[in-house]
Amino acid sequence: MQGIPQAVRELIGRVRQSGCGTNLVEMFERCIVNTWQTTVEQKEDGSWFVITGDIPAMWLRDSSMQLFPYLRAVEDSGITAMFEGVIRRQAVCILTDAYANAFNAAPEGKSFSPSDRTDKFSPWVWERKFELDSLCFPLWIAARYARAKSRWTVFDDTCRRAYELILDVMETEQHHMQRSPYFFERESPLITETLPCEGKGAPVGYTGMVWSGFRPSDDACTYGYLIPSNMLASVVLEDLRDINRHTWRDENIERRAAILGAGIQAGIERYGVQEHGGRRIYCYETDGLDHFNWMDDANYPSLLSASFFGYCEREDELYQNTRSYVLSEGNPYYFAGEECNGIGSPHTPDGYIWPLGLIMQGLTSSSFDRRCAIIEILLRTDAGTGYIHESFSKDNASHYTRPWFAWANSMFCELVMRTYLDEAPLRQLGQI
Image (cartoon, rainbow, N blue to C red; front, top):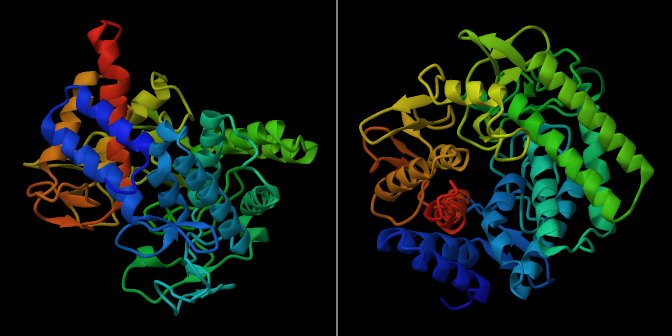
């Protein structure tokens, strides 16, 4: 394990000593080592860059979640340097283009689709799909790093300017139709790859929530107010207030974040909660004009992930009602097959289940046995590769998408550690 920080080696050793089984230990080791060795790189200028795996670009969302399991190892100086380098790199990306979702390592002009029509395009940008969660995840991971390390000096002036720009964009996108400069069009046979109405998206009414052009799957929103992303936004605005209290103590940042958060929360409660199937649950999307999209997608943030990201408690009745719907065939992207049952996405073929969805099902479950059962499913649906894929057929796991998807590998490691390092000892003591 050349080049692997000692603290990560110790995590592997702890999982090995937990008695969780040889196959699981081997997959855990492969996944946590693979993310570190193949996707995280320190550049010659000292900056850090994180690719998604089989795509050589850095998504703000993916890079945040790829690093998440390493929060348990922040006592290691190498891990600390990596986190702080990525936090600052993400801030630079946001300052480069706050509407972009993915970036190049250098201003090379590489792009997923060079012919995209949008209001501007930097050579640093790989793709310019505005996804609200892309502004949320850098704040989410940065705040959790600072708390884990008790180190708030990471938030330099670059971070401050980036986070104030996040506030600017969120405030603008509360009034998307009236104030936003953003539009996006792509020539594609897939309607999920472009926005209607000359790239501005379908009409929306004011709700207090923040508009998003695209989902965390990179698919276009049907209706512009994506409830899971607004849930995450409400969480990270509180994180920003916490960061501000520990660092700049800027009354304007505090005021703006508080007002934004209150508006988003009121919008979710008024427009995002409706009766469906005889129970009040969260919808996936709405437009503030009495249209609702009833579904959930395996990508994070999702409705299923609301308790994981801290929007609500796991036992909350509204969340539990929503969770029951999401994990049922009422959700058009919940698939039942010979391999297993789980949540998929319109981003991948019909009937393909996403390991990310299975992992979140485990992370939001209060049952130790259920978590173990999900881990067993993940072990036997790797198609013999030893890694976690983007998705696989509900009836035949040898049919899968994306052989190298680091976000899923990292979240598998998080589920294993929460199950066997955190909860297994409590179970043995009879406390859960």
